[in-house]
Amino acid sequence: MAKKSTMFVCQNCGARFSRWQGKCDLCGEWNTIVEEVVGGDGFSKINPKREGRQIDFVPLKGSTQTYTRLTTGIAEVDRVTGGGLVPGSVILVAGDPGIGKSTLLLQVCACLAEQNGADSCYYISGEEAIDQVRIRANRLGLADSPVNLASATDVHNIIATLEKTDAKLVIIDSIQTMYLEEAESTPGSVGQVRACAYELIKLAKRKGFVLFLVGHVTKQGEIAGPRVLEHMVDTVLYFEGERGHHFRILRAVKNRYGATDEIGVFEMMDKGLIEVENPSALFLAERQGNISGSCVFAGIEGSRPVLVEIQALVSPSGYSSPKRAVVGWDSNRLSMILAVLEARCGMNFSAHDVYLNIAGGLKITEPAADLAVAMAVISSLSNKPLPADMVVFGEIGLSGEIRTVTQTNLRMKEAKKLGFVSAIIPPAFGKDKKEKGAKNYDLSCYEIGNVHRLINWFN
Ligand code: TYD
Ligand code: MG
Image 1: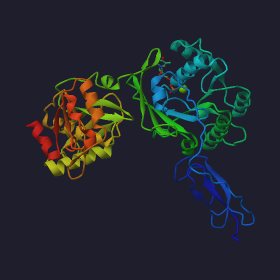
Image 2: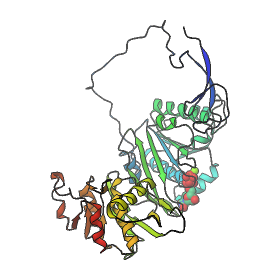
Image 3: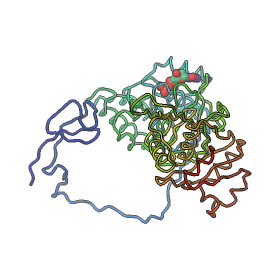
Image 4: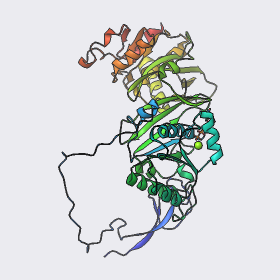
């Protein structure tokens, strides 16, 4: 049998080292390296002498347990979670400090407490004192809700207490402040976060309450602590927004009980977070007409259409290597669009800085924004404004071809609803049987098959 030996294994990323060190070279985390016994080949841990028991297989078809979702009454939260909160599910809410996580969850907690009574909703804060939470509740006008409030960090005590309740909803704000004596590292460290989350999740599954965990994000925008936290929970929601803007976006990036990429839009007002029913109107509110470099993109976020303004500024560069800066979009994608415009349309950006901004602070990930970005860039370079009542969408391929995107009908309907009169769209539109009838939206559609035809718009 292979000789047993010990290795030093990073608990965050699994990297192995022959000796202990304070920082993992691979993932950069501190104090995550722990000595572990490994078998001769490093992986095989199975004891050949132990006989395995048979596991039972069942047919795929069979009766399943039905669950009733808890609806919060805050439509945007219900939408993002896939139609309400599933009992026994665990939801991680992550976001920058000060973005409004505690505010949102206090609102959710109060709404559910009013529906379900005094012994149903528990808010446990490890960051703020009781008074601070009370002041916030007063400000939000929720001070009379029957929420059970505690300021605690010891997970042992929390579990012992929750065990005796009929909780339907528990909020832990935040998981990084929680502490479990048995895990021998400091609060907030990877080991602690994982151990605390594990115990709390186990309890939530057993007792069938909805558990919200607030998670901090690192400077790089990832949830602080082990990546495994994302795997342990059922749903991961990111709460995003620019500090200077008053609206906030709740985005589902993982959801075992609903669709991902669904967004909920809120406005942060002096009385807390207010739902935004028509995000497009909000994102276009500050748009100024007749300005070059501005183009309205008809996008889809989750299941609904959202119109946003894409702004580009192309200016002569003072640097030897010109600058490209992007807010709210993928900078590699911008480089690609510029390269396609250079190669296929004979444009030259080598002496120009290019800045791109998604107005309002929304982050777009859809490739369908390519065409709108290209239009904004050309409009800025040629200093000719696009018609203010026109929307654009379509994906651009490397050979300059413009590709069809999904959900054309939804995009067109939304544009029509907001008073737009024309649209630049990919050519396959209308030929696809499913999309038939889309031309009835009273919008003048210009189908463009290749980027070199874009130039005609600016002559
Ligand atoms: P908070 O929920 O404490 O953020 P997080 O828990 O994500 O750190 O929100 C803090 C910010 O929100 C703070 O800068 C003040 C602002 N705010 C409002 O604008 N209106 C309100 O009604 C409340 C409660 C907070
Ligand atoms: Mg907070």
